[in-house]
Length: 335
Ligand code: ATP
Ligand code: MG
Ligand code: FE
Image (cartoon, rainbow, N blue to C red; front, side, top):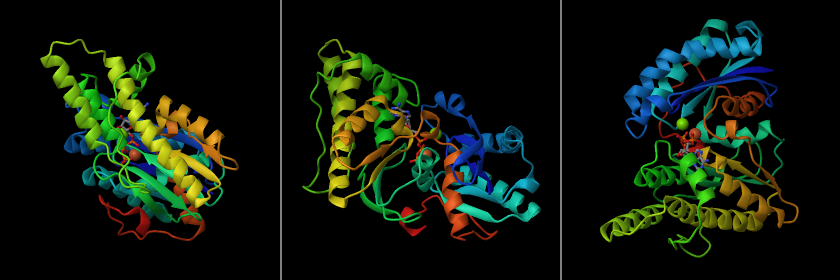
């Protein structure tokens, strides 16, 4: 089974060819980061236009690298949502055109299901499992009792983790996207500033990062007003410690309560060194629970993860019709 998969939900144009749901024959990612940098974030209009420019080039490249042609394919998969509508539509229309022209089944994939299924490219899933999704737009704990079934047991009530990283980075005058820069700085600094931890109500698996973000902004503001020297590496380390402590503690609690066999880390923030290390150490102490963490290239947006998620739908016969549309607010639990 060979699936050609397409991802254009945000600022990466990516196409992959995936064999039997777990083998990457190619995974081409064309990132637009350089074009959005000077605006300090993703500009939707610019993103759509760059996807149009890149789409066919990246498709050809992915087929070539995988050494396959359209006639070798079993299906075409595409991210149908959530994401920027203009960006999603480029991928969805490309996928529909290919499906129609070559008589291939079309499979719409939820972007976050894709992030979770990046782990399936590392190791087979074992159920029940818990996925910790930490990305630019999402922070969620997702319980899965079987393939294709997603129960969101906790989510952010305001900012996503990646969003908080990017906003704090901006306060520290670091370039967009700020996550990797904070990660590097945090490594050099000391968590000497006590920023708040948003635990929320007892037993809640929800998250909140806006209070922490404001605390960092206030700290910077006050230090500047008083003419005090700010050590950005210490701010980064202190911010990161607060984020990781809450995320990891809630993940471990949920893993115990739900009696899961595996914990999967997913989303762009899963690339964070501090998070990977802390989670690894904490899960080691949990008997009978295995931790899976994707390699860095499969944490941020890529089409390989979309192909991995699509394979399950292919096996379950859950194809999409040719009137598939981009769906900016697609609900993970409804897919
Ligand atoms: P979503 O998947 O929720 O739709 P998205 O696709 O824009 O959002 P991803 O590509 O999954 O998000 O992740 C991008 C985010 O990951 C950015 O906020 C970026 O700053 C963050 N990020 C990337 N690397 C790191 C890192 N090493 N440490 C912390 N954050 C990181
Ligand atoms: Mg991105
Ligand atoms: Fe993403």
